[in-house]
Amino acid sequence: MGTDETRDGVELTNLDQPLFDGADAAKRDLVEYIDAVAERMIKVLADRPLSVVRVRPGQKPFMQKNTPKYAPDWIDRVDLWAETSKRTVSYAVANDRRTLIWFANQRAVEYHPTLAPTSAFDEPTHLVLDLDPPGADAFDMAVEVALAVREALAANDLDGAVKTSGSKGIHIFVPVEPGLGMDDAAAATRALAAHAAALVPDVATTAFLKDDREGKLFVDSTRVGWGTVVAAYSPRIRPGVPVSYPVAWEDLAGVVPSELTMRTVLERLGDDDPWERSMPPTQSLPAELIAEGHTIPVARVQAMHEGKRRRRAAKSGDK
Image (cartoon, rainbow, N blue to C red; front, side, top):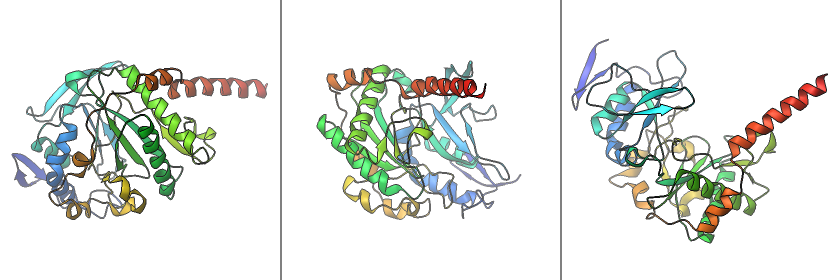
């Protein structure tokens, strides 16, 4: 495997290989794009444990959390205990341009940071609502629900920034003041999701189980703190390589997510950073909102118990 060139001290290889099936792009295009948006991406990745989604020729995409042993020593890392796998994971932290270039050369297409920084890992910096439509052709539902979320935020004297997910949905970020604990952040997110869904009950639901959604859009309130959300400007492993891209609230209805791709957004960006520009200042959450959220069951836990109940019922019915 020969070296094609070097950039910021990173050896780049096989740049003219196709990126992945359906990408209509080469690995070189990924490297050039990531380099072009590196300064913007570092603002949202710095000081946060990073998971990436990589794609190798002839293989399915895979998420990588643990930093490879062959990674350069100059990549910053943070070791965290993973309760699910019962092991310590050495996460990379993308604090500089050459780290991002190295990952791009490793065919890391997607970049998923945590919502809490390493410097205060019990304190998320944002609440996030992930609007997940029932199908790829239902972005208009996501727009309608996003506007309902904005209404719910305004009713609580809050504001947020919005971006496409780079797939079929929308992400809404609400920056919060330092010191907010993980449980309270999760509770406030659940309450906001419930408020928004109640505003458009024919379109939106907070039901975690797909079988309970009845074709409605899922307002996902489970992206909290130690969870990850794809970063603004990150490409996605989808046909045409769409990008998770910031959108002004007033422009949301006119957005076609498939047109916001790794090939098209650089000209649109120019020297601007719309994600930084659109992000409101940090905000204090109403105590009433947090208290209400603590009365709402945690979606994943509720779904787990309901799933077990249904399996038991089905098993009893078989007898």
